[in-house]
Image 1: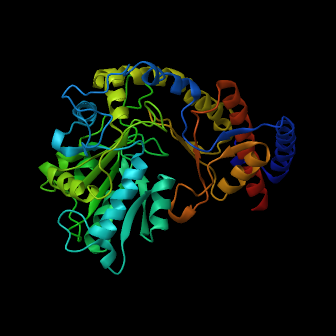
Image 2: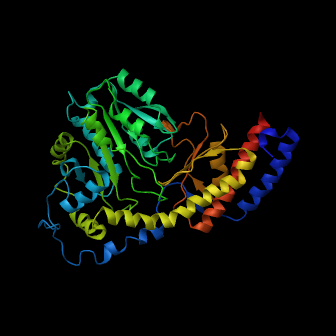
Image 3: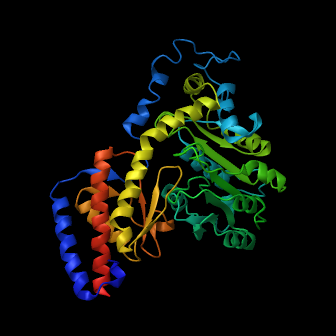
Length: 425
């Protein structure tokens, strides 16, 4: 029976039943976490040969670069080629960095604040304020970065095909202090949405008031498909060229969830003008990144086809976990008419929306019973979800058996928090 159709007596009786279920699960003394999108150990094992015999003493690239030494600021050719094929960019449009795309994003903003970007009249810090457009729910670390650096965040809602572009266009065009927008365009964190062709084209055709406005295109999940029938994303760099805005985008990606989160490769892709400008700034920051790691990746994957084949093994490990989450939500909550959730074709998250005002309570109940979830509100700027409804579910790290238990508890927590709210109204 739908909770919305129950009277107060029925709701009270249901609450008593659900409280009993909650206490039973709490007594199991679970110690599980679904707080972050972390690859499972079995996924990390897929790349272990990269660390064993990949180099075997041969530390020179095919062009003769000794990868043990200094130099090659923008990455060895073999590593560049992997990302050139993956992201469809040219050799002069990519820099291969260290293991963290998040660090590259942070460094890019710091340099923009202190030194400006290509075409800037002055560094961003010389303006009275700096603002970013932040589609939400979104990636909590993007928002934390802005908050830490004093960048004001303007929240924009998501539609089914990406950010509300009417609002994005209006905000970008109305204020010179709006310097950027955060985007996770494919299998977005946490919604799983992939931007439609129309959204990508409208993004590329933005007419911002700020001449030094930049799209921060965090393409973290570009090859992280769960199914053969996967989503497709337009090439933002090519679309910006077509729109006459070739310098407006910084694209980021990495192998963090392809090889090793702690030992992968990260990249920034942009126009040649941007890349040349960034390399001049970076020359004071580093002589070069870890070329031995770049060489290991190039030899292990060999080419883009090697990456896509490798990702099929990842999908085989995590696809059943996504299906467990969706099965439990459909089995336990759909008949009661409570909650809505996404069914992504890729990425690392499922986005769950509870009844308004219930998310914090659900997360607290789960934590009390031994299952740690991402903090409610974390997917919004300043940690403030206006509806207190969004919860990010990260299914990848727990084992299948642990995940079943965690989802059983999660569904009971959703039921209990919803009943508490309905009875209080």
